[in-house]
Length: 453
Image (cartoon, rainbow, N blue to C red; front, side, top):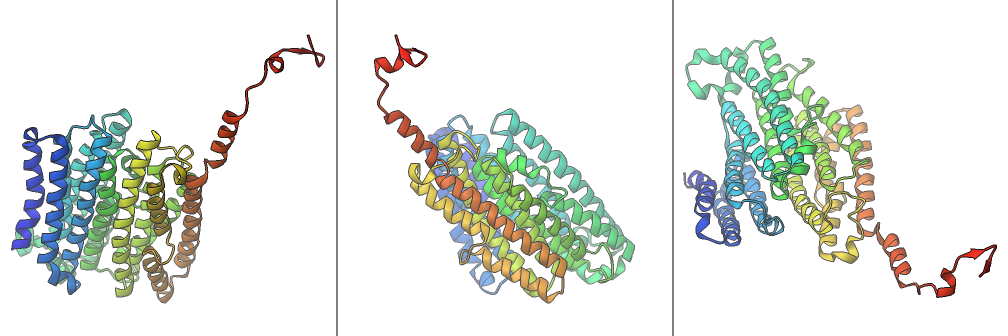
């Protein structure tokens, strides 16, 4: 009970601070929000320690959500200093509502409540993107809201199919609880189950950014404020994928069904890995690079959930945790690099080692961790998923995933090296030109036939 109260108090206090923000300097407001979110993180961690220690699902997801929310709140302090034109009151109102929707998705034990929270997260995060106040941000937010809403409309149709098959129980909202669905799924005809699975996996998969429903993601993540991009990519995508897994687990289909939940996750996951990896090779925008990496990472997690064995599901959840921390941090760093270089173009964000040594170290560690370099986290979860594919005899997916991981490593390493030192030769030539002695007066006199007059 205390945990639920604290979960609700967290976003509510941020909303109150935003509404009363005129009584404080905006800088102080940002710091107060960051401190409060950190207190919520510690408090919920202490109360949920028993559940986390026993491996209970929901407390782990909420703790991960609050961890990234705390880092997002602290990054918002510096981000607000870098963007003085941003209106803090509206920013924190939408930020708090977005945080509340994420906590609701993590805690939801009911498919309908999860869908409502996912839909609301679209509106809240879309409003945060619009807060950037430029035409590209408005276009990205509009594209995000339209595509995600169409996908979620497909999802609600599938949910209504499930509800219609179980409505005779007279349980109201409880009809769509995962527990009730799991124990009464046999009352749903196989054709309805298969149709609902296709609609729900495809619909909510749009919010995950699974290919081919991913087209909104690079625009939205690249135009959003960096603290918001961290929450979007690090937490929201993974929670939506977990929602799909909860439904697929509750509504099993025969293994020979062509479009069962696991088969769809394997298909969409493999396609997402391929699309995300190939896009990494040609990116020119620092935040779009990270966004396409999220598509690849969500694909890897979807493959893990698609295999469905306990080992594979644990690996997918471990991948979620590592990715949440690493990707959110990289979005924060990428946002600050964009500010200090006054551009998001990768070919202009160069020579970071000499000009911004602290950011260079953090950026290098983050990119190497994202690329799967041992012992930096993702290497273990990706190896576990590859092992699960081997044990499941999914040879084709194993080969494709292995090749994609190698290509992704090469692409990320190329962009990293180019950013750390890529501008050195140009800078050296410029310095050499500037230090060269000016030409003498006679050297400037035009010549005719090689003879000066």
